[in-house]
Length: 259
Length: 372
Image (cartoon, rainbow over all chains, first blue to last red; front, side, top):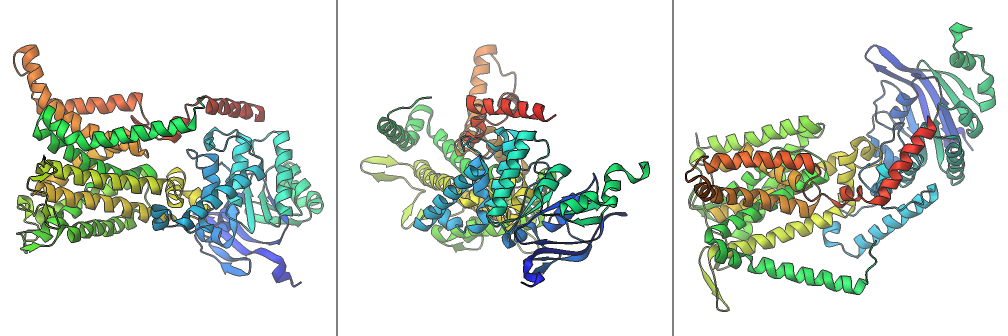
């Protein structure tokens, strides 16, 4: 296999400025098909900025991104979702006043096609598609382990299940790359363990996972490869074990100046 | 939990449905017998406003885009009808061409006005749409020079009444021994169109498009990350809402026989928004209720306030007209205090009050605690 077909997402020389502040400078990394890739770094290192650039929420100032063989630099989030990048949010962004089931059904939007006329006439094709959407949504809720009544409003789900619901919604878009922004933030140990198991199941199903995390222990136990950001620069990349012993990483986390 | 016998429930539902249908059918006759023919006309207006409120509900209730210039589409539909069916240009095109044309034109305007506001949200969107509404009104007010198109503030009169085939709604008809005066005929036409609008709204609500609208209402960023083309879906909401507004406008022009820019002011826009919000945003039943109440109650007050004061105080203390606005304001404040989700909120909002959901809520809080 050539390295090119092996790589799902490739970032080269990414730079992003907010006014005079360089949030990211010259970040390059590549994510391979089928791996769990971790992105860690101290607070304010630029993890979420990079994440938002990958998912199209921010426009990048420098550099290039290649996803699944296609280059893009300025692309709308919904087109990236079509291309196969699905994401969750650091501060949960569910459709709060819709039911758990409806949330996942919205995720099916871009893989279905019923328009105004289908909705109005409700012909056989539209009905069949609607049934398929609901069926797939229920499967996904089951898959991520939400056994509560599916008519519960998203905002009434317990915190851990809201995180899972976001993942189910993202999976409904049939992504090639599932990008998770701090999925275990605020979870207790049990919830973290079960989410870890879920992520491993998702990876086993052939979906590549990009994970931003604060929780270094989780990253090291779960990821195949890890990149470390600090002050908008990539300071290390490699296998979790290597990264953990990298002096630059230790300095970034423990505070180089304090040593 | 009531686990009733489904067959019986179904029969009950059919009975309720049949009762409602009969009620709606005899409503104009009952109203005329009890309150006089003037009230049938008011009921007709209530139906027009319900159509408007249902159209706006798509924009505000489903897609969450606060539109304060909605009456502009009503105006576009009304003027389209008036200009193509009155002595103004000597054109007298048939109803079944003019009305769809008005709706289509309003739809185009919906997209035109929607497109520049796509990046705006909340208050800013409200301000810009308010401006658009005023622009349309001011245009209509001033398009009498140098070329007289709209006849300016004088408005357009002698608009053709609605005529379906050879059947004019503006004359009394006798059918099966029952006499139908024009207001009754308009009632049945408006009722039919209102039911059609309700049907369309219900179908859209429970569809892929409806879910996309609600997703945008709930969280636009998340919706676009889920692959929803927010630009197109929002434009679709504007276009659908405007279409209904335009159709209602055409019916209004034909019914009234006279229109002027005065009928399409900011107050009217605010009134329609109030109907949607007061009744229950996003819920068809609530919107219908809101529309009916906001047309009928002020009229009842207008007719009732004078005599009541005469009886109580022996003379008129407060002019009924100013009392009307006073009571209206008071009613709005009270509803917002006690029923902030509207008089008849959507099921989703009601679901929050069910016991099952409450348990989940407590659980959620305990999880938060554990994570601290």
